Image 1 (spheres, rainbow, N blue to C red):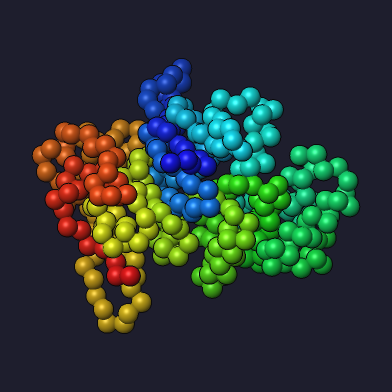
Image 2: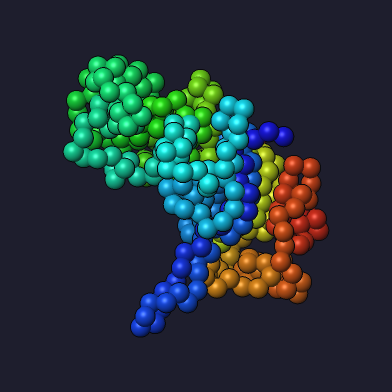
Length: 334
């Protein structure tokens, strides 16, 4: 199978400094061996608790931060390149094809720049020197994201949160990218505005043939927009499958716990809530065996010793659990 993006055993370890001489005494394994593929035109959701490594994965893919090891393979035309090994000049050229939508629409826009300059900056950096040409492209982008031409000369403070995020989306689209890493693009917005932005992203994907890596912690949002879902826990993918299959028949106890927290819009209906005990594992000193076993209600002796691999436990359904085939876990109705 040919992927637009293929991530193989990606790791990002941050050094922990200690002592009088600030020597390296350990590492925080923020991303610890993540692998997945992303087909062209697909939307893959990356979900998990805060601190699970979702955003770090996205930034490593774009090389906003340097990965410790692993491969990030991206297809450009007939050629596949390893993003990790590219020199600065080639990386700059590749950035035309890979862009990011940031989580906070308030801090991701320069308050001293107009909308024209914010959206036009990628065009200027990549060689579009004529201001009139840039302005025409920016007007086109504003129309695509539902903003008006008269917004061109305004500054970010004049817009609502939803409008600011639309400006961020327009900036990401400026160079006709193939892949967009959307880092929780609606989590800072009001619920009523979230639906509008999600519908916009879905419409743009269909119209422009975009591919999304959609980072989120809200499973309701993921269910609405994604084709497949990868669930992360302490720097590792613990489950990966199609979104409908994940919600109906989860194969990892951590996924079951996440799904049990999703509200069901049916008055009077009650579901068993899976309450996790203990704290999230420390990525600088994770437990032996399965990282999730101290919080898992199904854990057995082998879970404390054996290190589970991400394996196919059903057709197209991957899980990092030694007991996956034996467990019958609760999902959500369609």
